[in-house]
Image (cartoon, rainbow, N blue to C red; front, side):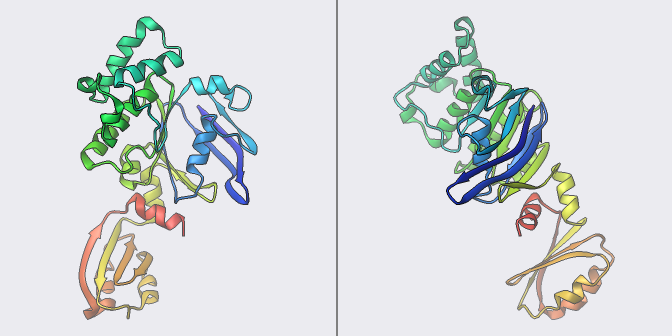
Length: 298
């Protein structure tokens, strides 16, 4: 559905995108994660036709964003990280305004507005002005605005950033309900969000894709089946000896926190012997997408 080819973008001396190549399949939910400055928002804005690349192209459902920007924009619903809403509008009037801008047929527009207000749980606030809404309510209306023209592609840039847990959970629910029906791109700093929602995840750093695959594939690739999290009294630990054990895949010492990735349980007793009385506590956990992220940007 979206093919990004050799995409580059400069901001002065800053190389935001460096020959970026990426393909997004129809109906999939692709997560894009990466540190600040990795190029995530720049790539999204180019896909949406907001920015022009210095080189390369983006083809959306057969249409080039450079040659057919109006056609591409008509197929995309975009929720930016900081949605700019017209605050003096009432919620229903805001959706009607954008529906008319996108050319939604007038005989369908009222039904479409009602459907979206119900989807985002805002039926009872339809006649309230935007400037009376909390950040969470504004985000709900911004999602409805992005969906007003029933786009084939929806792009979310940090949709739950700064929201309370209950509102974040509700917005993740809206996104999950759209899976399969729409092609979705989700930029997020929340690793559990990407892990839970996404079919595939692309890790961006330095304007390039550093790794990509299903969350399960990425986690299996970076770590073994078990991770030991050990709190120690001091850093007097022979990490090289621990790493030399056959089942140990990685050892990470950060202050008084020791993290060890294992392919099997059979040498745990040997590890504990090497740490000895230096150990304060020990926990086991499954690998997470956050572990993958940290490993890939080192």
